Image (cartoon, rainbow, N blue to C red; front, side):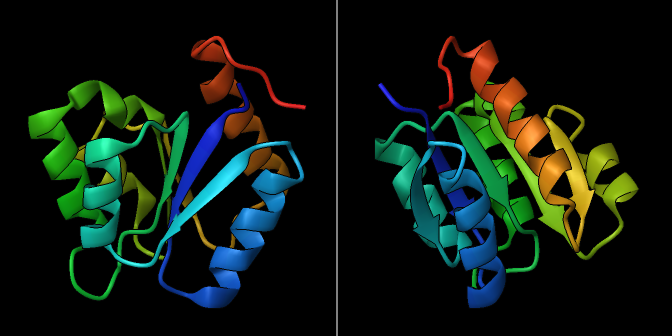
Length: 126
């Protein structure tokens, strides 16, 4: 079974860029442009990794992480935060997340983090 990634990003250009980077790695992609959509998807779908923006229009990325902290804390380890905010602050608030990366994201760094997250779950990428 191919690994799946959920990309939660409201900017269409950034969303397409992140999706292209991960799709090139052989990862199936699901997209959400707001935290409420992400929470709904996470409640009934399984993902190998979650790439999560913090500043979203209705429900923030921090609210998504707080929801997971309460409902499924092990999922936090699958989150790679991608944000224009202070990444050190995000790491401090949610130390269980895999990583917090500042925008603009270096594609090689994102690919490396995604691969390591997927490998820990016994899946492989192409």
